[in-house]
Amino acid sequence: MTVQTEKKILTVNSEHNFKKLLEIIESVPKRKRGLSIETLDRDKNFRDVIMHLYEWHAMLERWYREGMDGDSPIMPAPGYKWRNIHLLNLKIWENVQEVPLNQAIKKFTLSHERVMSLIRLHTNEEIMAKKKYKWTKTSNLFSYFSANTSNHYLWAIKKCETIAHGIAETDDEVVEK
Image: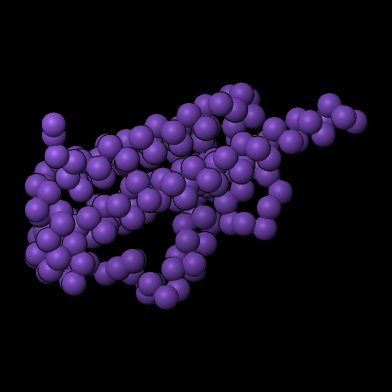
C-alpha cells in the first residue's frame, strides 16, 4: 500500500480537475464554445475563465523563478496588492478579450504542464515545509501550487458549468420561440 503524500494528492487532484475542466468545455458543440452568457460576473465565456487561469499560472511561474533565484517577487503583480486583487483580475479580463478560445486552451494547457513540472521538481517535504523558501515567507510551496492548480481549477469548473448551462439554455430559448 502506498502512502498518499500531500504532493501526490496535489498532483492527482490537479490533473483530475484540469481534465474535468476541459471536458466541460468539450461537452459544448464546437461552434458554440465561443458564446458568452448574460451574467453580472466578470467571466462570461470559456475563454475568460481559461485565460484567467493561464495568467495566474504565469504569475506563479514568475514568483517561483524570481523567488528561487533569491529575489523577492512582487506579489500578486506590480502595482497590485492582495487586498485589491479584484482590480488585477479585472485588468487580466480586459487584456484577454481578443484571444481566441483555441489559443487560450493551448496557452493554458502548456502553462498547466509547466506548473506541474515545477511541482514534480520538489519532494513532499520541500512542498510542505513552511518558511523553507524566503520568497514564500511564512507559507509553503503547497499553498502557492494548490491555489493556482487544483483549487483554482475547482473554481473554474463551477464557472464553466454555469457557462455551459447558460449556452444550453440559450438553445432551449431558440427552440421555444
